Length: 610
Image (cartoon, rainbow, N blue to C red; front, side, top):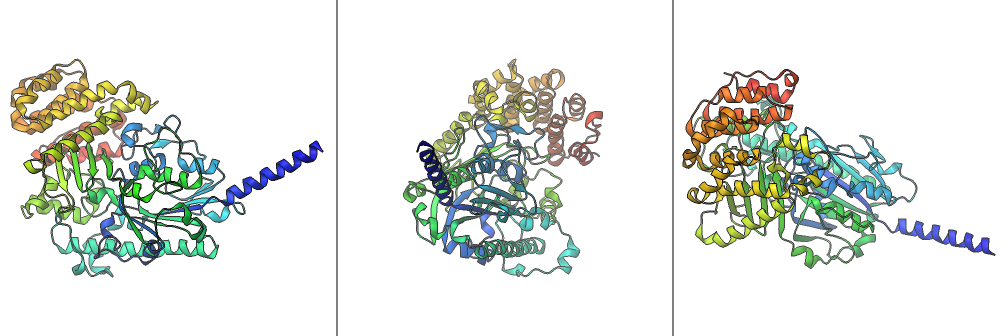
């Protein structure tokens, strides 16, 4: 009898487990690369028609405010995979020099789905800035499919298509002549920052054609779900992996680089998990950090501690509460060999942008960006004086902080930071971003080579143990936001500090002030000549060249020769490229032998040569 009771219990347990598995929905991610919401008809009447995606929307939800937290591939995808902000966990640089380990207690959420019984398949892009145990996909390949799962097994399937990728816009004049677009170039609506030229109109039209093509490819996946009788058991998410990809979008923390389309088709059999009606548009803000927690919650799997996101669909989540969410954060750091440090905070229709190195012009030369003919033409027209003030801004130094009212200025062309009518909102947004940067804390306030050398064993732990230092660096950088007379004492203290990274940030702040910072020229000369840190010497030379027009060549050459790593060489050469673009400085440089074969190093050296 006892054996029979045990057998009955086991059978009952197995039946319950099977029922539980059957109760779990499936998930499909349809991801178009480099795809801002501005080119999609669901968001913009002049955008590309995407009938398959529009059909998903009729049977689901359109999210009006969905954001990639970073505007470029690897950083955005790592944020998506970890549900963690990149600057907190050391994954914020595009094409990392050194990948970060998994944060303590955090797993790629597809691994958590797999552990919960899901078949996980990815076709086929990963592009992560992390070191992961390779257990989160059953299959990650060009042939990956849900059809390889066990009978009745729930699944998560992700497909990324490069049909809209930046590389598809690397064409020349001959291509324009021989490959006319289906979209009429005269019908497109150009963004205000772009000149109205045949090249730009063709670029827009070709990009819209690509949206039509990728929609057809997604339609094939949807039809396969229907053929398999799975569509009404499957949540289908369509979104862009970040914004893009016409000139000035991908790689830059403007709305065109961060604001992505997001449509979620809600299956009939799991409609009870969603507090909304078919065809609804959701106004609440959601970001890539939220996607993983959402799938886990829908699957009945508890999200791990230590992540930054929260679910926006599932049992117990009221849509009224989701619609009340009105905040999103963004970050832009290094994109290939081009460095910057920008953080954004959006609350409702207000967008605050903090450029910590405002002299790092957006249009700073970058090899891959400038393969796009429209990019090259845009820059040439700037150099020829053929652009309006709005169109020229991309190639000029930015303000350290900017405030935009997106309800009337969706393309961020009018900075309201100096408008007295917005003084209260500016102060609130400034403090909100400052609290976020300090609270993470943001590892980018250490130069990337320092992170690589000291932090990558455990970036989160390093950040917490250096939180006070990072807060101090933020304070030095934020001296840029007060009148120079109020900032002088803090800058002087930073330049006299024994901490090299206080000196580093003091010099950056001097460069941000421009000619007002001339009283620190003598101290900068001392640091350029004698500081033991090559990066501090580089920042001193940068300040002296930008503000005092003093030749930087000797200092930069010596700093490059002393570079301890290839990524330190890349950062030094970023200053050389900036001074080449802004001042016309040229450099005769030799890469240290150990970095001579590095593409970024060699390309930069060739670019700044006489």
